[in-house]
Amino acid sequence: MKKYNLLFLFVALLAFTALAAVSCQRGPANTDTGDTETPADTGDTTSDITDTTGDTSVLPPTSGLENPVGLRSLLLDEKNKADIAVKTLQSDTVLQLVSLKFINSLSSQTGLATNYYIYSAISNPSFYYMVNAPRNGESFKRFLMPVEDLDLPFDLMPIPMQYWKLSYAEALSEAETRGGDVFRAKHPTFEASAILARPAGQYLSWFITYRATDSSGDMLKVAVDANSGTVTVI
Image (cartoon, rainbow, N blue to C red; front, top):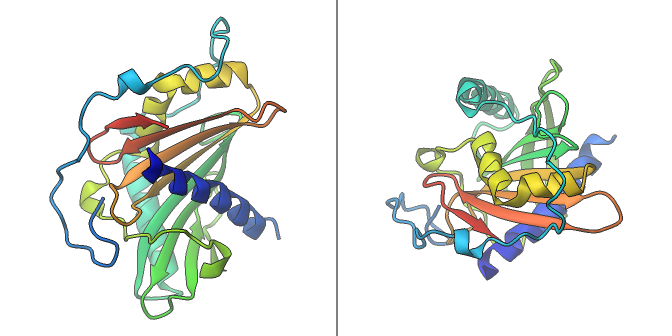
């Protein structure tokens, strides 16, 4: 599971820098070859699953997750609007990462804190172009972030849309059945991030992190292949 550790390190860094800003797959590292969908690890990962949250006697509260089927058209429309918004800043941008953060609920109405589409541009590689897409009726907001502010320990590849088949709601549903619901039962105050990314040499995946905001420091990390749905508990 070492290949996921750097990504989850990045998730923590991204959450910090993104919140600071608003408070004011596959293939080799250097080319995108359009490879075929042949996951290297397609076996059942349930044997790797352990209860990392301790007491399971408390029933988990309702997650608040929307029906993934009902979300699909909304998400496609949201992504298309983000594409249009960012291209008014830079015409050659390509989507590199999608980042959502939830606080104390997985509902997009009551728990969604940030919802970013993050792009890069060949003609201006010094910056990431970020579009925040609120779900509360507010207009989209655009930001520039210097690349060095993220200081990634790996190369990100553009998101290959043909392999983006699972929404964040489907990925979170998988994470819930792998211990996320038990985690929330133990930690009513928590943050959950859902990051869609394709680190160089890896599969396009949703990287889910639950983090308790009490004094325990507990975390739960799950990776869900965005194409095949294969789940790995880190």
